[in-house]
Image 1 (spheres, rainbow, N blue to C red):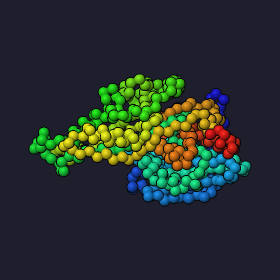
Image 2 (image 1 turned 45 degrees about the vertical axis):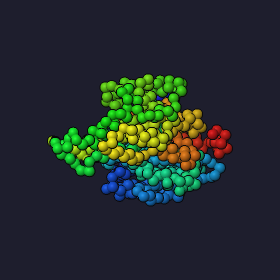
Image 3 (image 1 turned 30 degrees about the vertical axis):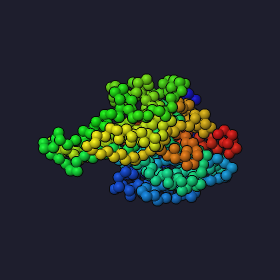
Image 4 (image 1 turned 90 degrees about the vertical axis):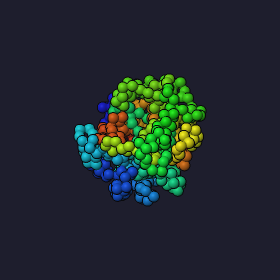
Length: 469
């Protein structure tokens, strides 16, 4: 098959489409915003709905686990220890809808217009992980026994950095034992071209606070006599990059592994061009480390972004004060070879050098995640590639992502398993922005792909796994 349009759904999937769509609309209707306390009830209600849905699908051992913040939902279907086991991961929490006025559709209405289902979380990540639940439902209700053990793990804290997931996985390591995990929270190249992600950047998120005077001071009386924390912070931030766009922290690049020439050539050939990335960013000119394409800068090289600034008067007009403190939010994306703990230590040493004696600087770390990669030649990745060819009618391209998904490193470190990143999102589906949507043809083809993937994995015996890995 050479075209997406040639793919025909299996009879079971085609007949169930109206019901599957209604269920997805119900799931998207939950305002499961994990970061806002006023929505904690909606998060719990979404978890309860998912648990009931997993029971109706035919899964066993369904349970909602309480954590210090938001619940984890678990279910399983274990058929035989002689069969391999797949762990399906997804997150049912979503980003806030702000700015609400920018939405042209209800954020939690599950509205369908043409080929799009609109709503916060429609693509990130409810619609994507729901493809696997629907494929599993088709397999379970087909009447023939599964040749694959399946476990489902759905969390409600991904959008706030999964603060309780690591402890949960460590406590339930035996229960979560599997041969592979699958996660669908990444993008395809386009609606016509599927893609398999084999690498992610790591991350380090921190907040830098600069403290000056104990209280606000009149700028007319004390300006020029007391160092303004906003000025001190600005001067520190200005020294985090050199004029050429490289991060100026001493030793920062020492552990970065250069990408092989063949990989760079493949990414340049198959990845988005500079012009395409600039169009998607709605920017006129690129910026960053010389010697790399814009795509390479976002997936192979590290970056540091200042994602938020606060301090001083923020209202209308002018208030003549020197603020007592100022702060900045820092987001590092780390390249292969880098360790977030090492980068944090390097940053702390550099900040100690940069901070003027008239103020005090405090760095608070909020998130650490290592870079991740799985070889495209891995048997599970090859099975996923074959499954895409079934579901979309063409082979996927291999891609790296500049983003970070911390759970895949947890699975690698705590469970010792690789994660297959089977994305069904699109670059333009407005994740984290107003009018987020899921491209419904991707949903239907995603179900077909997941069906093919599970069947492929079911053909791999435990002995074969040991030989291939």
